[in-house]
Length: 52
Picture 1 (tube, rainbow, N blue to C red):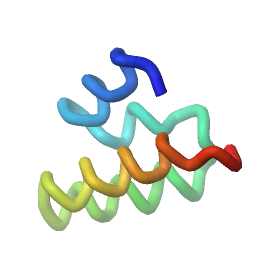
Picture 2: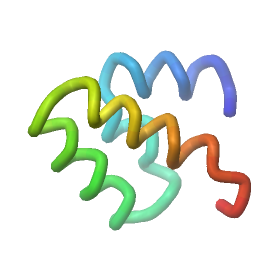
Picture 3: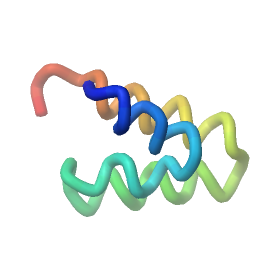
Picture 4: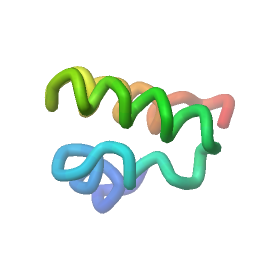
């Protein structure tokens, strides 16, 4: 997880997970619409997942 991805996850979470697949983008986008904090948390969890 690079510094730029973390910074992008804080500013605009859906754009930070663009390389993780369509499902991840959709989940983060929906959570981001519900509130900024859930979107940021979801993006950071997806980016920190070692399986992907």
